[in-house]
Image (cartoon, rainbow, N blue to C red; front, side):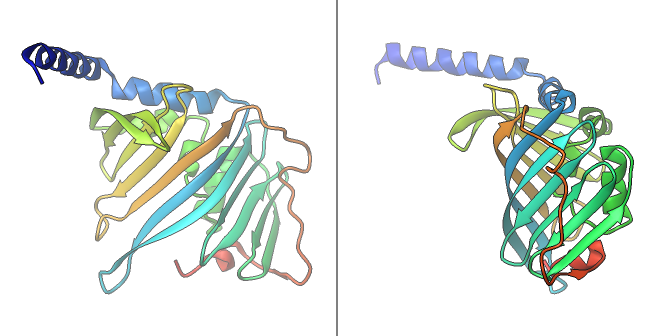
Length: 241
């Protein structure tokens, strides 16, 4: 490389560094998450990588695929499948449902409230599992950014072949990372590290096929019991990781 080319290369590095330094990670996250909060409805496909630390100290990583559909007027459906689990959990505004394909069980319970209220009840009281639900609350940006002690913009990083804004946030209990597609400013990947748990296990979701205007009708969130499935509780649907 000649001296002229070296000069050009150094100039480009300087421009990149300046641009990165001007980026506000909290503002980027707020804009991206705000698009989800302001959408009347949404659907997205997800790939999930979840770690667990066994009693012997062995860390394992489980890969699953799924989809999420949500209407702000009242209703959602979370589905996930993998080697040890194949299930759906949904809410139609009047009832919550669950289907566990591996365990051959079905759940149907009357329940009403906002999506946020029902997601809280399902996860904290009923033992249901809604992967990545924290990104689908109405006040998602406010909740995630409320206790941030440290934030960083780490430039553009590839996700599914697209260079995405990579922002990192440090909180009291978890650190979380967000990759944002600069084209539509929607999340491309989300990662949480539970730093005070043994082995610091991580939870990661990669998103594809975002649709902020999906076709939703009265039957979208209604599940019916397949033939031969036993009535159960949500806790009966959970796999042994």
